[in-house]
Amino acid sequence: MFLFLVFLIGFFAGLRSLTPPAVTAWAGYLGWLKLQGPLAFMGSVWSVAIFTVLMLGEFAADKWAQIPNRISPPPLIARILTGGLTGACVAVAGGEGLLLGAVLGGIGGVAGAFAGFHARRKLTHGLKLPDFPVALAEDALAIGGCLWVVTRFA
Image 1 (cartoon, helix red, strand yellow):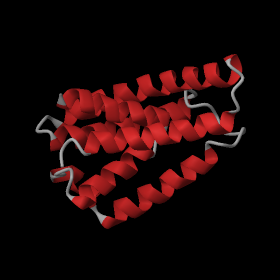
Image 2 (cartoon, rainbow, N blue to C red; image 1 turned 120 degrees about the horizontal axis):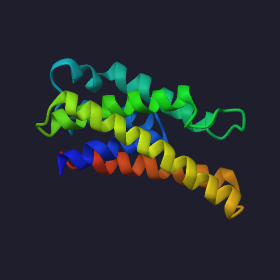
Image 3 (cartoon, one colour; image 1 turned 90 degrees about the vertical axis):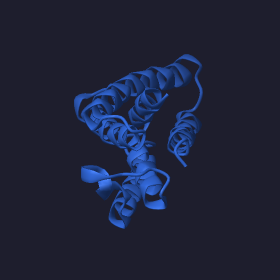
């Protein structure tokens, strides 16, 4: 079960790269996730503040047409890294290995990026839905999904 949660938090990083780190930081800070060793910094007030501000900025930036798509190299790399970081946090909190969590979370980040890209394209281009509400629904899915993952440990 824990390895599925590790992949899933990475998948949500594929949708919104900074939502999983923000939610994971809050979960560590609130004691929902027991983050130890090199990942203990994720539960600090500094991590909570920084990742929350970055997450809110990403929510705003995602609505701009000039933002590169998530499967282009820089955004995809960011999703792999944040999926790996949060995957490692979830894995360690579940008693699994840090490296396994990082790899599985990174793979989840790739899967989420491509799934989210194609789903959003299908909804906005194929079904002609307006982009803004689709993006808001994706925001809600990422937030809700991440909260669901981290509360499995509380």
